[in-house]
Image 1 (cartoon, rainbow, N blue to C red):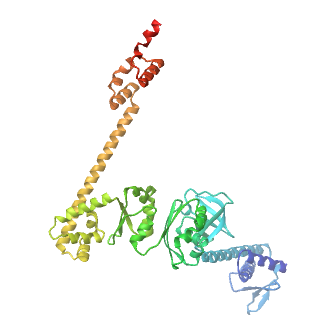
Image 2 (cartoon, rainbow, N blue to C red):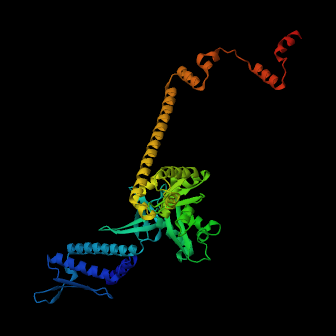
Image 3 (cartoon, one colour):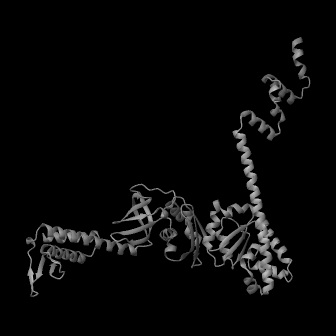
Length: 473
C-alpha cells in the first residue's frame, strides 16, 4: 500500500508539474484534518503527521497534556475522517496545480503556442494548450475566422489571470505582437535582432503594415523578411488566412517614413506641421484612391504606423489652400513673402492650420508681435468659418438635390402604367409617346423593313415602284 501511494504521488507530480514535496505536505495536512475531525478538536497544534519519503510509511500522533507524542493507529479512524482526508487532499492538490499553472504560463506570456480547438462558449473560443485550457475572446479573434473541434490553432498567450479557483489564460490571434512573434519564428534575422521591427499597425483579417530596419548594412531588411520568391512572408500570410502584409523600410526622417508607409501609392510631396502633429501629403489624381486605400485603410494604417495625422490632397487642392491663405494674410499690414514662406515651412498651408495653431506659435517660431499674430489668426479664423459654411451649404444642396431625384424615381415606380409612361415620355422628351401617336403609326411588316434596309445600303431609289413592276410582269 505504501509503495502504491508513493507511485501515485510521483505520477501526480510528473503529470501536473507539481513539486513532489508539496504533495507529501498536502497528504500530511489531510491526515491531521482527519484526526481533528475524528476527535472533534479545534486545536490546530494538537495533532501531527509525517510520511516517510522513501518507504511511504505514515505516522500520525497526538500531543497529550504533558506534550508527549501519542501515536494514533490509522485503522482506528472511521469512514468520516477518511472522507475528510480525501476532500482535503483533493482540494490542496487542485490548489497546487492551479499555482503551478499560474507560474508556468505567466513565464510564457507573449509566446506563440499551438493548441487544439475545443468549443465555443458565448463567442469565445476554448483552446486546449498542453495540460490547460485557454480562451480566446471574440475581440481577440480574426474576423471571419471559424474553427471546428480538433482544428489546430496557433495563437499568442496574451494574458494570464488568477481567477480565484482557476487560472484564466487569454489567447489572441488579432494582437500585433502575434505578427511580431510569427516573424521571429519565420525570419532568423528578426529573431537574432539583426533586423528590428521598429513599428507596426494592424487591422486583423485585412491588412498589416510593418516598418523594419537592419543594423547590418549588408542585410536588406525588406528582402530578408520577404524571403526568396516570397517564401517567408507567404508562410505568415497563409497562417493568417490571406491577410495582406506590407513591409516598408524604416527611416528616421518622418517625411521619408510617411512616403514609404503610404506605398504602393507614389507620393509627390510631404509637408509636416509639428505643432499639430499633422502631415499633409500631395499625390497625383491617379494615385489618390491608391493612397487612401479601400475604405481609408491604407492611410489609416500609415497614420498609426508613423504616429502622424495624415491628410491627403491633390496638387489642385493643395494650391487652392495656399492661395486662400495667401490672399487672406496678404491683406494684413506687415506680412511679407518671407513670412508666408516661413509659415509654409512650419506646415501651415491653409487658414484652418493657422487658426488651429494659434498666435503663440506665430510669436515664438516666427518672432511676430502679439498684435500681428492675433490679427493673422483672427482673419484666418473668419475665412475658415466662411469656407466651412460654404461647404455645409453645398453639402445641403447636394443632399436636397439627391432627395428630389429619389422622390421623383419613387413617384414613377409607384404611379399607374399610363401615368408612368407619360412621366417617362416627358422626362425623355418624347411627346408622341405621351399623346398616343406612336400607337396610331402604320405597322411595318418584317419584309418591308428588310427591303427598306437593303435599299438604304444599295442606294437604289427605284425600290418604291418595285411592286407595280412585279404586277405588270
